[in-house]
Image 1: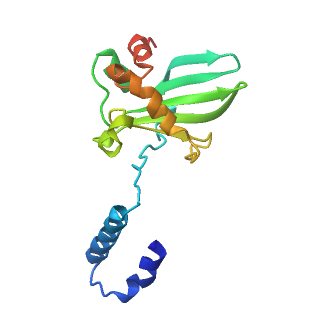
Image 2: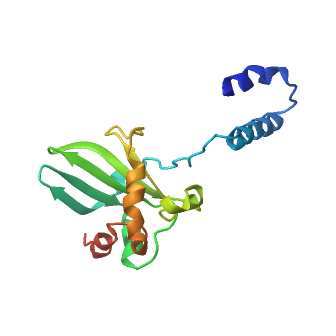
Image 3: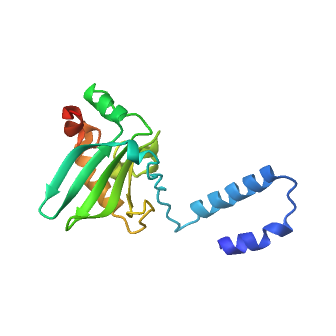
Length: 170
């Protein structure tokens, strides 16, 4: 159907880019509202460009695997002050297996991102995404499992590592 729309878009006279934008927004809305069409919230998490400035605040090694938890120093300071982490916060887990880095998991908080998720799956305004060691999105991520597990941590802003942040000493 999308191919059909784009196939005919050139035959419809549109005087400006604004008109084209309105047309495509309307078309997308029609598709979303079509019977039987199920929309899933977009995952907005991005790999942090400032990852190299993050500090490790948690080491969760188990046997030959485990995770290392990272956040910006400013994020840790906010947690230590007992304040809620603000939108824009990113937390990173490096995932290790047999001593080798295998992937990253990023937890990112956005403004009203929770409203995009069904209430029973909501984790505040946090979204989750798995990234490969190259920092590219791993489309086979288990973000839904992250959501399900983190739901039980509502009193800690949906985080398992809040206590480690609060206790962090450089």
